[in-house]
Amino acid sequence: MVAEDRAKNGPSGASGLARPPRPRLDQPKAPRRRLLPDYDPEAFGRFSERIARFLGTGRFIVWMTLIIILWVTWNVVAPLALRFDQYPFIFLTLALSLQASYAAPLILLAQNRQDDRDRVTHEQDRKQDERSIADTEYLTREIAALRMGLGEVATRDWIRSELEAMVRDMEQRRMLLPAESDEADR
Image (cartoon, rainbow, N blue to C red; front, side, top):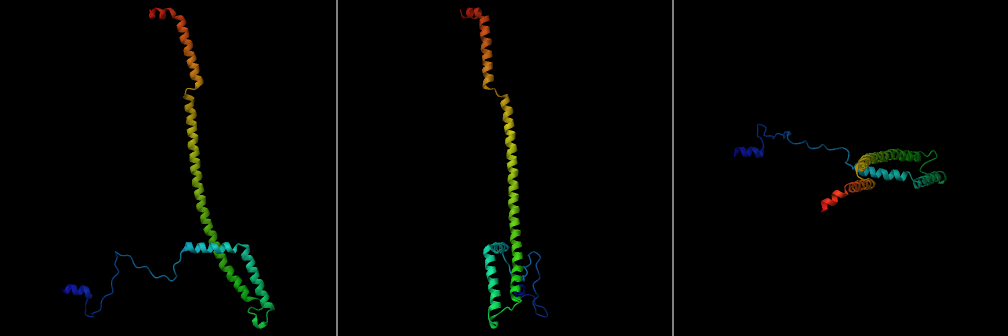
């Protein structure tokens, strides 16, 4: 009973404090808490491809041009109190730089994913080519074997010539030995 109480309550010593549990060697450690949130790289890659695909369209160029024209026009023509980016257009430069700094890595990520897809496709094509070559070599060997086998097979002309030769031989024997065959019949 005393042992059960010690197991339930933990060790009781002079201080009466429970010891912290010791790490067990037969169990894996708990994973550490990460500073950055988890994300799905595949989903992020698809997202970056969509953005890169949009950045490469004429629609993006038209929208970007219209926004810049409106921005510059507003900040040149509008009353001074309503202008939010004066002549050197520092804020516009910052916005375009920020857009470029995000667009470049996204485009590179999309290109890397495309390279990976191309590599897989190339590998599959290479394997298919190897199979096709192996099949072609096999069929070539089979055709050669059939040709060699046909050389040994009796053809119609050869059989006809052999039969004709046998008929001639039989006729010659018959002519030479007609009397013997007639006597044997009696």
